[in-house]
Amino acid sequence: MDEWRLGPYGLDAAKGTTLTGRRTVLVVVHHLAAATRLADVVPLLESDRRVQVVYTESPASVLRVGVGDYLRGLDGLVIPYPQAIRTSFDLALAAGDGMLQELHAPILTLPHGVPPAVLSHRWAGQGPAGRRPLAGLRADAIAAGGRVIPSALAVAHESQVLQVGEVCPEALPVTFVAGDLALDRTAASVGRRAAYRRALGVEPDQTLVFVSSTWGPRSLLGRHDDILIRLARTLPPDRYRIVVALHPNIWSWHGRRQIRAWFNDCCRLGVRILPPEHGWQAALVAADRLVGDHGSVTCYGAALGVPTLLAAFPDEDVLPGSAVALMGRSAPRLDPTRPLEPQIAACSGGRPAALFSRLTSRPSRSGAILRQKMYELLRLSEPPSAVHVDPVAPPCPMEADK
Image 1 (cartoon, one colour):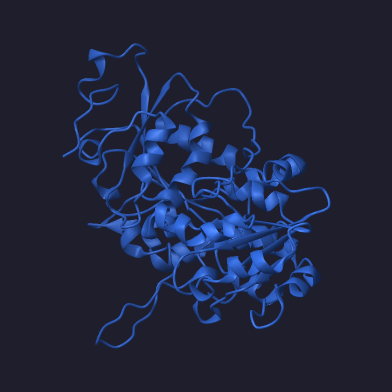
Image 2 (tube, rainbow, N blue to C red):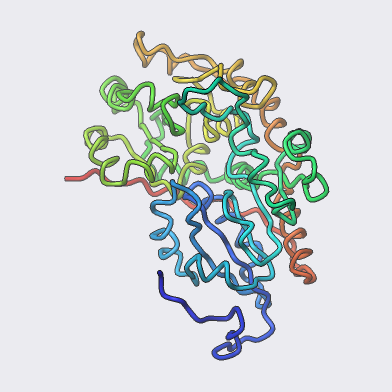
């Protein structure tokens, strides 16, 4: 078992506490995708001297590899999960699911992507096929043991309230529309486009092609594992710069060393690969073209007006009427059997306004809504200062291995 760590929480908090009377907030990180979303939310309260933030890594996800290193890199106060579930907190934040019912705290759960739109993968087996639930919206993740797990369940769009009602109607009283803070921060960053392009090494006369792949066999990378090297060899380097964001689950499942080894040949040809923890929002702002799939990053980019080509899109897995389905209808498909450069050069924008409105019902207001809810659960008055939506930091692509 990990070492039990004494600190400003639990029964022994007074032994070493300097600032007394704090509210304690536990940030529960299930995987790197959840970590990136929580990183947007924690700054809304961590500067308040009445609040102490504590982090823990949940063992519930098989895709948690890399979370420990990420948390240590934050320089935050980290405790092992067995200690976290034996300690009372004033609030717990999570952007993943699993084992949250073991916590002793009011729980606020957040989405870690666009509104649920993709059906879960059907397991192999001998029994007859059953109904596939929406990925990221399962009844057993919302309620357990006859009780709803979260005290507050944040959703980005009004349509998600109906989805929650269909899956777990008992959770409707705690469901609230909070918008999408990740999308708000990306939209607030458009004024820094030139700075982001410089950070990515893009010359003023170059076209930045941003490649995004979600995870799994139906993703862009799952269906076209040679797409990056083909782009690197096809697009003239004097006219194009290629930047890549792979879903954090790809890194967690296969390992960082393996990912770097698989695509080091691309990096030697000038492809820039972003780390899984950050950079995709800035790259979307900087991009001139987007090559992607049915993942959240591709959907965000299309909603921001980046001309988008879909190199993979499992129509049979996408919920009709969803934002992802709208993107699938409006964005052209990339044909891998035809020359790539003419298709990329000819790509134009789709229906960004219609798509953007499907992703959030509270544009530019998510930070204020989430802060209000967190302080309500903490039983504290909100700080008098207004909530500012901060632009994202410049991207830091990984260097090629020598």
